[in-house]
Image (tube, rainbow, N blue to C red):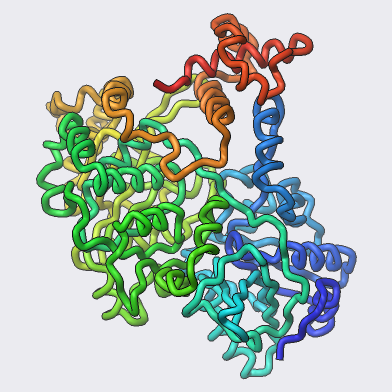
Length: 621
């Protein structure tokens, strides 16, 4: 029978019933009971004779406000969107490298880029496949699982793991065996009133919990606002959308490139004429054979089935549009391991009748990310699968980079990306598709994301398959090294092609007389912008909605432009940008939002002129 108690009493029970070293497992992302975690953290911090190790991933915190223009933009936005979300105290200490000596935090995935400068986080990172996390955490001596859950009056006596059955469901049989051998392992839950109740495999009887915190959590759920989708991202999504086969299976990740893919699939379904006209002008002829074999351009007659470790906002939009509608296993349209998204995503799930929510089967991550266990069923369900993920760098020989910098610092983690790439090769008719922006710009410096070499890889080159950039598609499966290089050069930015060719030739991997097909010598952002201007309606900046006001969208675009073009520490560049600024009366609402309508002093005058310069340069047609 579950013991219902306060947070403080729950901490007392944990300290009384567990040994001196508490090994606490917390769900990835959204499902952490933050107030309980903070209470236990505070108590153990003051008990030097006790130890606490936290095993988790994706510890979510508000974005750092920074200073200057960034702070002026973020401060009111963060207050509005995140409201009373309770921050994790250990995360603040982790960021500042001030964890108590008797407490450690081991993570296998980090909020992207947020802990690059934390020595403790970097040293205690565990590089592990998502599907191996339960095994590895259990082996460390896990003795406490703490998790947010959902309840529904239509399901009395039951609680739902909701957003995070992923690792917990894999841990429960391991925990049961250890309990049978006499170990004490506690399962603690707390209801969150805003969590959608997800029925099915992620439901547990209330009696499965040893401790239930009696006071439900009513604070704002952490959310990930949709970010703007650029022209570059849209063309990546367009190319990838041509490789999705009707009647097949779709996995897609979070982020702007995933949103761009969703937007392109929605256009393929509902605006076939406009979609085909854009693609005709874009000229898909170099890849038409691949598209005919593996994908298609027609609307979806049979529909897709979704199988994705992360049940993302885009998948829900595709269900609502009737694109993801191929049912498997008792009417399930999407299998997911965890979810995280904008507030509107949670609201749509909460407001959905329970019977409709059954179409979204939240499951153990081992079910989704691996083929072993029920393999014949999984193979039957996952026909013509397209596993679509993003990377930030790719070598010309076929290795992909998504999690770590060359110097060893971890940006995020491997997560399930390797799992899905491997499935792309293991399943008949499946393909792994990696999305890549071919170039990036920061501080006025433009560099290629397609490189000859990089000091780390997430996906080794022997698993190379399909790579998509804004300039096209490279089918690398089964190709020679020279052919792989040639195909990647064809989808690289033309500003870098000559240098890349020379590097490959110097290494003896490309013939000395190699000449790039002239069709690929016009891979420029300007050409894509010209196409965008002629097909504006197919390039929505926020295809899945936005938490930003109209003025904030303008300001965010301007700030991103400034970040890409200027090194803000260089005063001469600041002054030059300020001199090129338009008049203040051209952007009154945007200046008002940033508190710069009436600048006070030289600093605010510079901020105003910089913002105005960015607003004019980044204004949309």
